Amino acid sequence: MYYPGPLNKLITALGKLPGIGPKTAQRLAFHLLNTSDSEAQGLATAIMEAREKIHYCSICGNFTSEDICRLCADSNRDRTIVCVVEEVRDVIALEKTNQYRGLYHVLNGVISPMDGVGPDKLRIKQLLTRLQEGEIKEVVLATNADVEGEATALYLANLLKPLSVKVTRLAYGLPVGGDLEYADQVTLARAFTGRHIIE
Amino acid sequence: MYYPGPLNKLITALGKLPGIGPKTAQRLAFHLLNTSDSEAQGLATAIMEAREKIHYCSICGNFTSEDICRLCADSNRDRTIVCVVEEVRDVIALEKTNQYRGLYHVLNGVISPMDGVGPDKLRIKQLLTRLQEGEIKEVVLATNADVEGEATALYLANLLKPLSVKVTRLAYGLPVGGDLEYADQVTLARAFTGRHIIE
Image 1: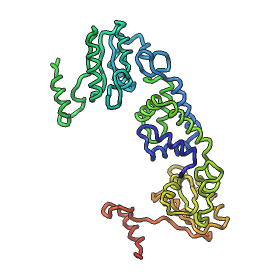
Image 2 (image 1 turned 90 degrees about the vertical axis):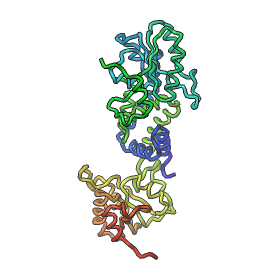
Image 3 (image 1 turned 180 degrees about the vertical axis):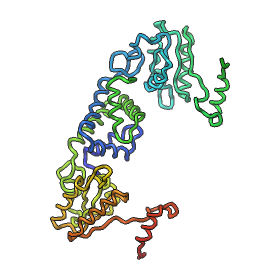
């Protein structure tokens, strides 16, 4: 009511983004009106271009602008190990550690009956197809350490049991730099169970 | 490095928005890739449309999609009083009070030597032109209550002194619902100075 039509539309469109409330949407809209032509146009073009050119890697489900993603195409990576993650952003997080040199498989979600997401909605069939090729020796289940991630890991572990492939799960324990005093009981218990000999 | 080109571009473009850091930009970009076509396209179109159709009202400087804004065009509003504000969003804030029925004048900034903004960069000349028409009897200076807003109000008050027009400033005092104990000294002193007889 207070704004002219096109401005109202812009505020509404911005308000649909996650974590952007009405006040922030208004602030962003005002910024987009006051900023340079190139910045505003740049954003609009970037949205359209990304939508057009970015799609899922046909092998692992990562984002790519090619047919298969940079990681799957990289011949230097270890093709005998696959790390199963929930979302593309988990791939980025793991890549930033510079620790892991194998391949990935993005499930594109997590089993969550509350949200109506069953195993059939995830990219599990594609994982099985990859395993059937026989090159993969180990599957690392790197879903989140919450209830849904845990359930999905358990489901996959059971599913992969008949196959002659090693199935592992990321370690639980104290976060590095974490204080024993402030760790929750479950984490502490898991850290205790998972204790290892100092070499 | 971690993302394909078009996704990287989108994250960079989103990261230029005020208050959007790299993590949020990444989250928004991922959302824009995963959401429906209509939502993503809607945002891109809304940005371009708003940039194209929204401009400043030729009289008061408010945003409008017409030549003059809804408020200036409204014949029911009191044309003898003009409220001078810093930004368009201040117009919205004052309109929401449903208290004021006069016209506005948006300065489009505030005098701030630190940022290199002098009086000549503000819409002060346009204000003087409006005053010369003779219809306006009162100018309410409604710039912010901070140093720059205060300086701008003082500058305008001096500038308008020779003209036969009443110049007023918004009242200082306790915010409604505010606790005396938590009010800062300056506000409290101003509230004391501005005390009035209960009728």
